[in-house]
Image (cartoon, rainbow, N blue to C red; front, side, top):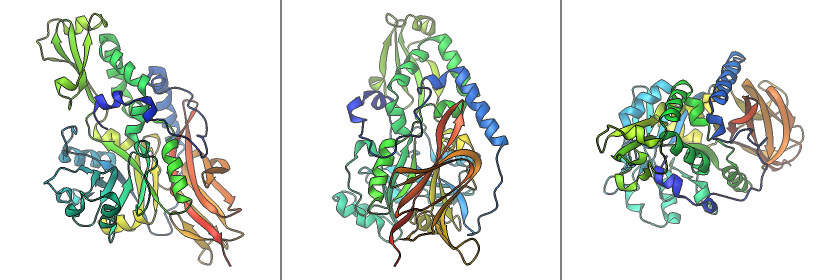
Length: 457
């Protein structure tokens, strides 16, 4: 995520987008800050454990594709507000079971971001790219001479061959044209943080009270994934943009971790009455000044410490935790850069909040003509003319609420491991899977669409 000061400094009006498509399955039962209470976190973890015990091992895929766990929008050692290094990211990917990382280096001329890590490193495939001009750019080869050109000229250079370009931070550019783009982010972790004003203010209060800080540190240690995920909400603005774009095109939806490992919050002493609050990447002048006259609980924390001393620190977003929070699963025949690019461009992709449960085995496709070799199967990302008799099938390794949407509107609902419903008319069909945690249904999986447009003649 970006710098702490920017998260707190964005006006609410800049973050609110109109919603036109289906609303979330249900409104959150608890606000993000309420989810950080000990009882809530304990109940969420119990729900996650119960779901894991009810996991159903599904048959291997019949198409021979591998479910490769990928990370899009990842930063390491690429800017002054990035706290992590590439070596740290590699170690975290191995621990989190991530097989592919699409890097998003900030553009810093004269350095060419295509000179970043590329290829397999200790079992993890790295694919270079950049976050620039409001886009995630993944060209096959350097486009350095094009980087300062207008976006309508830059994008064709990036997507040439098997290059890819995704629209990023939809809340900041809801009207950005999709011309020539491969796809867009359909979830971004940073957007959730920006929306959680109350939670960020509560964090200030927790970090400046020794008892509340001790409690928070304990909760983050005991329930690391649930704490980071407390801010996660339904990405309505992103999905609205996606559904609208797919009405006339085909755009791959990916998840944006937007991970920098920079959300390590700290409290630094100025004097016995004053402290600075920020993150490890903030300079003193960019941190927030907190005075004991307004927060008396601050005085015992500062007493006896030298000026400049770090009196409190808590790490919310190590790479491993961020990778478990959300990932982009790409169905590809091999863990190679050409295979990953081709599969991502084809829409063989789904997004999952993996901390809630392992989604491996999830599948969504349209079928016609029965099962077996004689039947027709239309996988995620594919398009074919609609015809009577087509059916949509979903399978899930965990019992979930399965929501089938057509052109952004709800078409069918099912509870359990499977859904099967007729494709009653032409449209763009996608599915969402929701899991019940602590009595609250929260979004788990977002599939890419099956496109059934027009009518077979």
